[in-house]
Every structure is written in C-alpha cells, then in structure tokens.
Length: 415
Image (cartoon, rainbow, N blue to C red; front, top):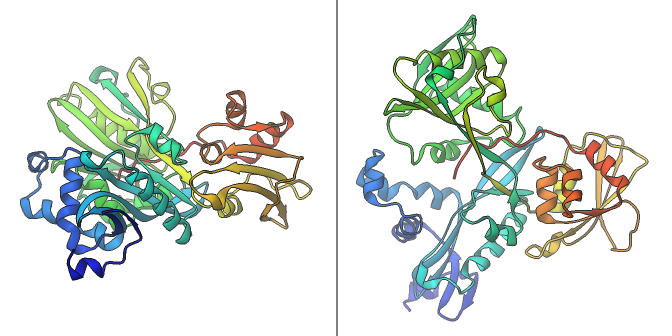
C-alpha cells in the first residue's frame, strides 16, 4: 500500500477491506461500480442522448455535494452508498431528509456484510447531521426493511385509450409548451411541494437527478390562468403513437381540466395515454369512462432516523394538554432510537422526552418501520393494529386516528 493510501482517513478497517469517504479522485471507480451494479451500459446512455464526456462526469456533483462512503479492497472500490442532503414536506413541516442512493457492491464481494456496514454508518451520519428522516428507492424491499425502512408511497401507472380521454372542459386559461428549465414550470412544483405532504423540495441537485436518465424528447407544458399565472404542468413525450406522462401537477381544478384538455387535443396523434400517478388515489374514478387499466406498486421507502426529533417536529392534528402518549420504539440499527418516548403538549408546543421503560399507561409499542409508515400516513393505526404491527390497548386507536393526518404521501422523484 502506497503512502497516499496510508494517509487516508479510514472510518473502519476489516482485514484488507477499508471504509472511507470517496472524493473526486475516486470518480472513475465510482462511475464504473454504478454502471456495473445497475446494468447501465454506455450504449444505454448513448440511446438517451448522453455523450462520452457527459457519461464520465455525470455523477461528479454527487462526490462534491453528497456524502459518499465506500469499502475498498486493496484500494479498489468494492461497495458504496450515497447520502443526499434533501428536504421533504411532512404535513406542511419542511424537514431535513437524507436521500439514500447508489447502494452497490461488486458480486465478488457480496456476502461479507459490506452493505450492512455502510448502511449502519450512513444512518449514524444522518443522525449526526440532524436529518430526522430518510427516503430511498428500494432495489429489495425485504433487505431495506431489515435496516428499518418501510414503504410510505405508491406509484400508480395507468393506460387510457384514446376513446377514453376526458371530453373538453371549458377553462379560461391555456397551456403553453416551455423549456425544461422554465422558471414558471419550476415555480409550480415549488408551490405544489410546500403544500403537498410527502413531496420533495427540489433544489438544483434534485432537478439534475429528476432528469438524469430521461431522453431528449421530454416536453414540459404549463397551464396558465387567464391572468397568465402558472397553475400546473405536464411533463411528457410522444413515441409509437403513445402519449407518455412522466408527471402531472396542478394547483387547482382549473389547471387539472386545462392539462387534460391539452392531452386530449392529441387525440388524432396517439391511440393511448400512459402515465404515472403518485397521489395514492386511483385515477379511474375521475374519468367518465373508468374502465381503464391501472396498476399499483410500492415506490418509496422511508425511515425515521431520529425518533425523538421526529416526534417533536411532527404536526399532530390534536394536542390535548391533559394527555400523554408513550411510543415504545424498537430499532436494531440505531440504538439511540430504542426506548420509550413520552409525548405531551403544552401551550401549543410538543414535548418529547425519553423516559425509563417503566410506563404502563397509553403505551404504543412498535418498530421504527411501523412508526414511520404510520406517522407518514401510508397505513392507518387501526389497519396496523389489526395486522399486529402495533401493540397497544384498543382505546388508544381512537387517539392515534385523531392525531395522525389522513393524507397519503406524494413522492414522484427518483434518485
């Protein structure tokens, strides 16, 4: 091992394996592992419009703006994980969020617990950085469940025949196609995200990730009111007589009607519309001809990183001053989360204290996974109780149902 290697700031050493943070000098190894693990070939990238130099430097911002940790075997990158510093809307509370991505290992190094070690350090890093919650797109739901993550949102894909498209609905505004970096387009998402539970607050890096693997045929169209105020958008492309919707967002029902008018105006050009809906509610009910094809699949998983901070910041619907609730949480990966948290309220302020495990009144016992999916609104307390995911007295369900907002998370991003 050379002198430069000896001077590395290793976080953990296990035989010939050494864990450390990646830097710009590791860019080629980083890209190579990423492409190998996710089976992205240079040909695939060329097909979506990437050039050789763009491929080489596409992920450089990650190494400069994110926390990237890896195991090295004799200075060859063997396994890695990436943590983005992001923000997410949790029932109108904008919280710091750690976005996990780039989890990868070369096959010859699997079975050695490398990813488990990286996840443990990533959780600790997010805790030290005061990120109360973390999101990730899972490649294996069972694997991430073992680490404390749980499903919190769904992706609903739909196919609508041209004959099933909504009939025109009169609106006063109109739709205009805009550039993908249009300020109006970005502003609509910003307004939407601060009002919609679960939505990612997109910064420059988030927007880069949003577009990273899309082809060059993407189009953004914004709906403007009569006063030319941007109120919604649809991002799409057309290929093989199909109108593909990447995302559609609207701030009011007028914009919703206006965008569907625009989509239906392509009637003579396409024979079907395919798209994704992240609202958690099927689209069929809103269509006159509801016999469309819709499929539902789990999309994003989340994990509470700091239970005490999350319970303190959480926007409970009711805050009874004469009531205390004990969340008895189990978390194998984050020992600081294990314990009994007494939550109470005083003068509109939430008080959360970790107490000795000797309470017997108003106790709700659950894993960090279940705590996450319940407080994020993906599954209701009564449902979780019926399926034995939480242990509590039956009367506590009434309190939990009243405290926890009913809105499901909206999360349309990928990183």
